[in-house]
Image 1 (cartoon, rainbow, N blue to C red):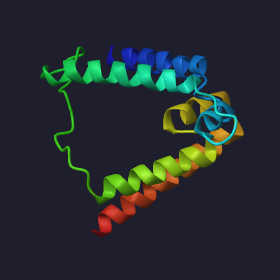
Image 2 (image 1 turned 90 degrees about the vertical axis):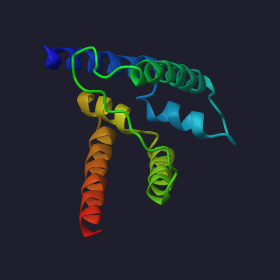
Image 3 (image 1 turned 135 degrees about the horizontal axis):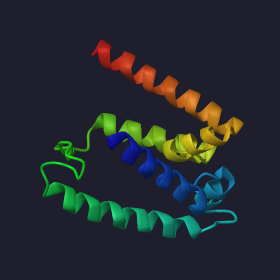
Length: 137
């Protein structure tokens, strides 16, 4: 049952990304181009996502288990440290260069778009590099 629910939630999320235009790198880059032909439409999508996320976390913080009976795993740390800042900067740079972030990348991968394939491969390479660096410390 959990697998079916996870699949349906992921499918709904992917459809939402497509409908909102988040899986279109050109639209995302248009949103990020503040000095050029700026497209503010994704600001509404992001604002709605933040509002839904805030509501979801407010509910989740009061629960011990999810609706499917799994333990809630909410990060306890609120520290802004060096790894967080570096990771955020790398994420922002990658998003700005490609116009793709991880969720839409998986949506693009599902459509077979070459940009999605390249991005997901690069994302996995970055995750592997991070894992190697973490093991060295």
